[in-house]
Length: 174
Image 1 (cartoon, rainbow, N blue to C red):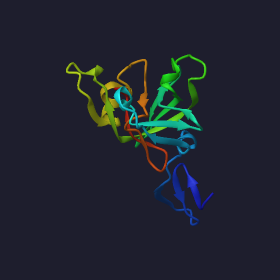
Image 2: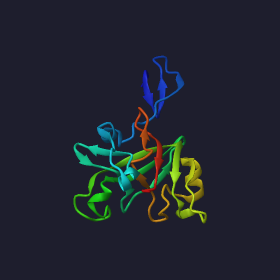
Image 3: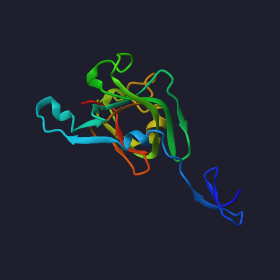
């Protein structure tokens, strides 16, 4: 087998493997490519939500784990399986019917910027670090851990690169 990608490496027609690595496409990309962001023009408490987030016309503002979410180190990124994209305003994301739009796997770049909430720190200050630093320090991507492995608020500081990898996230609602 030549002139194709094998295990992420390109093998030329001459049978020589090159150092060109093809990154896998995150399963979540088919959803995140369809997400629509609208600037929030509200005032008061609603300004916490810098923008409204929709998937096929349905509000989607948080990403959180389901019962069997796992985190895997994949070298330059983390693979987080079985995460729920849903609407925090629709009720309990852990059981209420209709609050979860879809369940998928996300990829978070290790150098992604994460803003993590104040619960971890005595001085109640927001911390900003890389996803790798966060995972090494806490073992999760959530201030609500250890049972909550990921909690991402999409209304603020949530970005995905052109390949579908998360490059900026936060886990706080206020």
